[in-house]
Image (tube, rainbow, N blue to C red; front, top):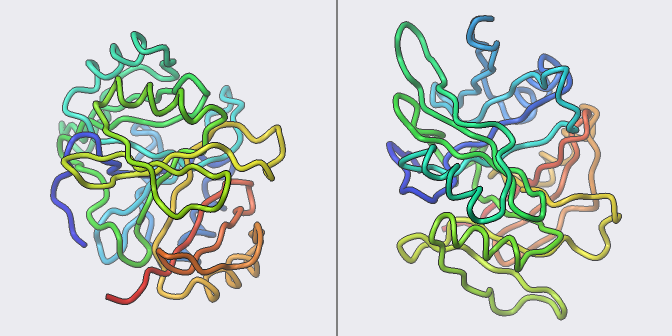
Length: 263
């Protein structure tokens, strides 16, 4: 599905901060068939990834002074990034990177962004669109199809996000015993999910957001990811939302792929 705008509160962009940007670009372009173009050094060498000339994701180089492991970041579209940053502080979150302008070619302003954390430590970004609205496609192969927060305190995370963004939360029925899964709603539509970090995860796994990319064939994508140096974090499995798999790329960033049911 093509997008020319996103309703405020909806995830609109995902990017990866990699320890080796060029290697990450090679891995994901081979896996998904993307084409990636890096900006000039004065604009940070940011890698913009395209599918059929439409931007779908970004891949950047992790700055040396930042000690976080490589990871995908979900960006939520907002009308006013500065106002959201102020609300985050009032709600008990953290501002990891304050509002900054993102320049484009010439004098273009692509947008304004900030990187934030909820009280459980889950990192996410906000994107105030100008020339760049976010991903030009979503919910179709090799674009993002879903995002979810896995939190060490999902109730606190949901309360925080509701206070900052005004979300209404709905419990998903029919989940396995002992598991609670909630979806955030914007104008009555589900826009992302949230749950506690599963009990089987090692205790050192922090709160984090997970990006799901739509693919045409989950099993084939999983096999090719492993052949290219990635790791399968379990076998592919069927779900009510399609066949899924969780993958760790060669640098340790986790993401999911999902083959959505045919319409």
